[in-house]
Image (cartoon, rainbow over all chains, first blue to last red; front, side):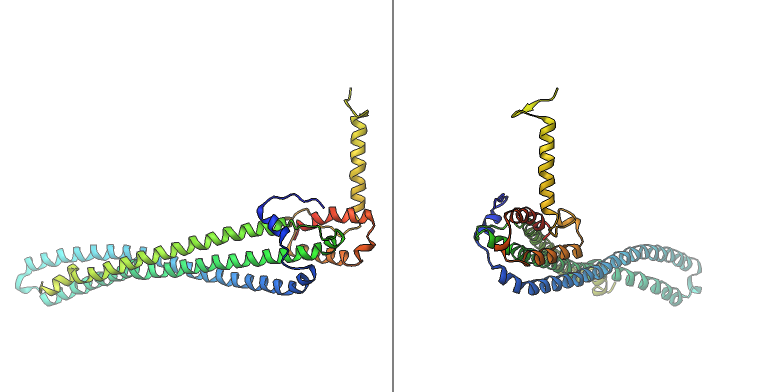
Length: 233
Length: 85
């Protein structure tokens, strides 16, 4: 039986038949279950990635909202400051200083709160959630790889079974082409590379997050808000 | 005027080729072959059916009882089946 050799893997396949057709027949239900299980795992991994992606998207939306709210509140506070200052200039002793300063304090607190929430969002929550999402993508890449490997094993096992009598009739002088198996193996190699890419992306995000957190800790000691408090301004 | 090859006209050659393919197809017809020539064109259920039918057929009789014509047809068909596995 003449076969065209298209790759080194095919030569290896021909040289090393890992199972006899009988063994492959007994192994088939196991391989089928492996594929079914890996498909279920892949679906779960995809669902988890989608869930975490929704959180990442919601974070971006919240950050946009907080940025715009901060800008609006800051403008209101500045305008209020100007108005209240003018009120003091105009009313002097008649001005309810405690009342107006309480109003200003309330607005300033709101600005500070929104700014802190924005800062927490862009420096802590969003990057942390993104890392979790990237980890989930790496898990998904692993699950995809497992699924393709299981499909390749099933293809290989079926090929051996389907060829059993042909091999027997040819006196064992038969090599396996397994073109589909070979393609699945190539897909598996590509999927394996995608795992690396996904893991590296998550690792880089984690390092970037650590750098931001270090800076945040340092910045926390010397922020203008803190210095104002320390120096009693 | 048509060219000649080994004393045969192009029309005779075409007829010979067609007859050869018809004979080959006739030898393949009794075999449980997939409707499409590649895995991508088949649904998972169809792939399953191809495998089950093929295995059912090929294991149904001892290989010693295969005629030379059957053996030749099975060789050709095997390649087609393998593309769906």
